Image (tube, rainbow, N blue to C red; front, side, top):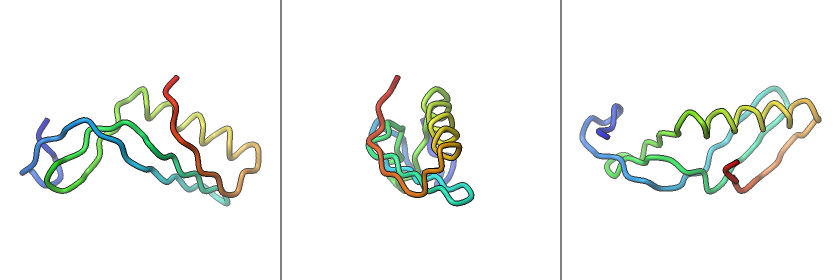
Length: 75
């Protein structure tokens, strides 16, 4: 797909690191599958992956995690 940010590059499958922060919780997910723009590096995560991230973040916030680094594992 064409990148909507730079409007120049095409995306290709790759992996990224995503950091989520909410209140006192910081979560870092490594090796997250995404479509990554070859030109500017913008990453696009699909809906199913986004949903998994949000669920994991909610669980971490509720359990009182302050900082956590995880390797992403697709369900």
